[in-house]
Image (cartoon, rainbow, N blue to C red):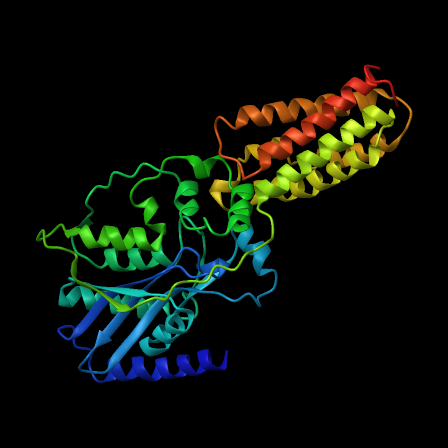
Length: 389
């Protein structure tokens, strides 16, 4: 934190120096910086920044739209509900590059083909962004993040705009991030559990640019509309990355956990049939577990993230089973218990049908099968198809 404060002090002096001594658009170099993914959860997808370098005045800073703090109250819930605010951070380039050198990440620089007046427009726009009343923005992982902010700042200053070389990609947000979290199965599980059907829709080329490497690729082939010249003058790797060591998140993967639960469910159900005894507390545990997860998914209805509002996994994970637990533990028959099994069984069946329209989190189908087995047992027990109570 002290190093960051020192960097900001140096930055203010640097910017003032560059401005007071007369910024030279002819010697000002504007670059897009693309940083490789690292192993921290918040950096699995890479990062983007803008570099402003003036060899005449000595100005050399990195403009970063991904500044946040885990220390802010309720940061994680605010992030999940789409109400987290990120800030612009501008620091001397040497501090920026040190962070990636220490963590083993790579940094690729694309020097942009901008006209002198466009460079000044961009510089002035960044100065306005740095004002206290403008420095924060409402972050959205897919639609408004550190990469899209950098892209928009650059493209808005280009007269006539730019044209991207059409790509052949026809993919969804979910598939894009799957390509980046393959080694982090529980992080992927959490993402997929919260993401709804909107994450499975086809994306446009510009929508896919939320990912840093996609923007780098598109900028590399883009041309200016006014003179049909390439947007990027030169591309170079200014920092070579090291191999990232993947730390295992948990001993078992989500699918292995789901299969283990299915095996336990089959064993418990078999014991019940052999012993002619109904193990209600096992069902109560399953209901409590799914209700807790369901409460989280249900709360996503109120999130500001468009891709989480409609989530068909709510058919399996929802708060409804929580209200069934007390009735379940009653030993006498009741129409309420009959109703609870029928309702939950119907919802589970609808969940399987919903899988035709939405990709579910890893192992959730297997978990649904475990719940379906217990509910079918409950229905058969109620109608005296099983020889125990």
